[in-house]
Structure formats: structure tokens, C-alpha cells
Image (cartoon, rainbow, N blue to C red; front, side, top):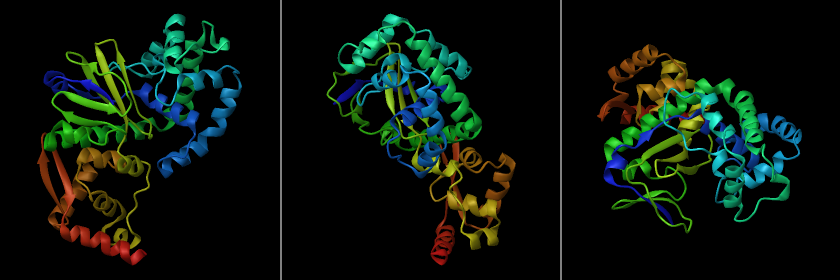
Length: 328
């Protein structure tokens, strides 16, 4: 199996960050693979953007081959998935420059590692990094940027959720199920996949955890200085963030659509930050709805580290489930 040796200080300094470039790479990987999507929202997004993506790729006869060689089943060419820096001030253009600036020699070396052998003769050229960067820029502008504010809120909500898990159950809980094959093995070992790769020493490095919207994931590192785990946002958050959470009609009539929607979302504990991200409501509106639900004993709250989490009570569950049964 593939695992990292992570000492206690490095793990304690681990950070959750949002990376616009990683979001664009995740979108590109889904468009490139266009396999059956894990969530209905992924499928709908693919249906909306795949035709234009195919036309864009067809404009450059080298792009299909480059993508096929850069994204392999068990390895990505490093130049196209640079490790995030973890600086909140970095925007997409600054992150993308790291792809564009990759030297021709390093690109070919990265492709050879991904392929397990020399790249095809057609790719023995010096402009592959620029071509890859131009395609990522197109993916960002055409498929990510129009909905980036909503996506970012959902990713930030995932970080809040993971941080709450960390405060309640430690790293083993927060990392469990983050990506396929990943789990805390105990001691100082973090299993990152089920592949037969030698362990890597992560002690003293910067360790980053980066959520993305779609069911794609990968790990990357930059020497021994910085390591990153890019993981899919929690499915429930991703789905709800796409607007697929709706309250039963009768419940919405009883409580009002916004308040009923919040009650439905609180089937699992969530903070006000998460609720703002998932509903699109203003913070003040969410707070007012929560107060009414608290006063009615339909929800309770608890503290988890620095966050206050809200969750449905038994009467709240009964009300939601009764309306669900009435609709079916």
C-alpha cells in the first residue's frame, strides 16, 4: 500500500485550504474521463459542458494525446497537478502560472513517470506546458468561474465540517473516508491509497488538505517541502450545494420554504457557516431561522472546538420524516 510517514508536529500543523487551480484540474479530469459520474449533479454538469469541451480539445490535435498521457489510472503527470501553495491570497492566474512555467524537460520527465516509459514521439516538443495551461484556463473560465462563488462556499462548508470532525474525533476521524483507500493506520502512518508504493517521509513538511467539488482525487508533493491531498467534497454537501435539497411541500407551507429547508439540512450537524453556504441565505437570515427552530425545540446546538453545530431533535426528525412519508 502507499503511505506517508507523518510525525505529530507535521500533522498538527496540517491545514485545509481552497485552491481554484485544483478545482479547475478536478473539472478537467472529470471532462477528460467522462466516466459515469458519482453524483447526479456531476452528470448534469458533464451534460452541460462536455460538448463544448470536446470541440475545444478537437481544435488542437495534440491535446487528446497529451491528456491521455498526463492523466493515468494510477498516476498524474506532476506538471499538470502542481502542489497547492496554501496561500489564500493566490488567485487562479497565479496558480496557473506554475503549470505554464514548467520546463520542457520536466514536462517530458513527468510524462515518462506517469506512463512508465518514454512519451510518444508526437509529444517530444517544448510547448506542452503552455498547451496544458491554456486548456486549464479555458476550463476555469467556461465551466468553473460562472459558478465559483457557490462552489467556494460549499468547499468552505466542507472544511468547516472536517474541522468539526477533527475536534470531536481527532485526525483518524477527519481523514476517514476522505478519499478512496485513505485512512490513518496509527503510529505515524497515513495510508493515502492501496497501491504498492514505497513510503514517503513527510516529517517537517507543509501538509495540505484540499477539497474539490467533483468525485476526483489525487495526492501531490513538491520535493520534501510540501505535500497535498486533494479530495472530493463530502457528497451530501456537494449535492445540497447544487440546490438539490428541498423541503417537502407541506413542510415548506407550515414553516416557510427557507426555514423548512434549514430543518431538512440539519439531519446531520452543521454550523451557521455551512448553512449559509448550502442555502445561499444571508448569515442574519440563517440566524433568525435557527432561533425560531431552537425556540420550537426542533433543533439543538452543541459546541465542537470553535464551531457551534446545530442538529435536529427527535421532534424535528419526526416532523421531517412524517412529511417525507406523506409525499411518497
